[in-house]
Image (tube, rainbow, N blue to C red; front, top):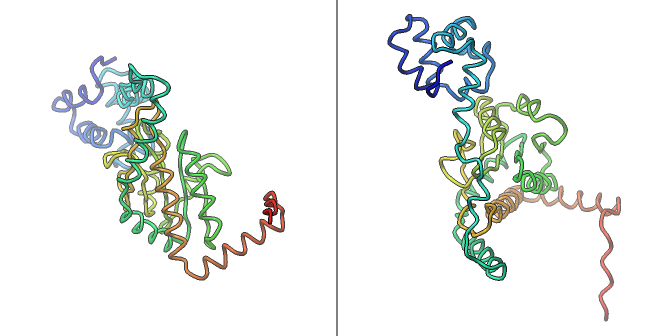
Length: 286
């Protein structure tokens, strides 16, 4: 088996490979994410080659077969940092000082948010015939809030990715014209990157709520809504900016809906009241 990183081994071996394997090798080098996540048959179809050519390429690099090379590509893409949270712990510091520092950092992050991209993204949501909202791992809660708020007033369909079944089935249901809202921050969920790729491939309008312009789940996004997740003193990145941005996005989309959105919201409220979903408020003392 090749001991150097697989892409380094590939680039070094390219000049000595047969012409057809050179073509396949260059395809793998240029599409290493796809090579690590898609089946060999899919890759072969995209490259205009046969699956056997990918096997021969792997063997030419010292691997037993394509599966072993793909495992090496996956491992090479794995973040070097295996402790993304504990490395954020700052000492010295007292438990009395920490809450004030966290709240101050979140307040500063909220003041730094830019409302202009939110308004533009809301227009895309308003126009879309169907909206998907995706957030994974710690971002799941924020995705659920945004999905819930949009459903209160949107007559058109709003779906939560993975809300009613396996996520991969939802990714396969993305369609041209859909709007896909994805949330993420470092370290990025692998599923968020796959969802972004699926959205772009399906010709959807991708809206990314992310902590950096270089976020892999923001690649190809038509709208990028940035929030600060990393400046606070806590061991875990802050989600305050992401939640505030998601709520601003829902509010701006509602405002664009005008009277029909208000009617829909009132209908939803009436249904909730009929189902007695909420505890009645206590009568205020006179």
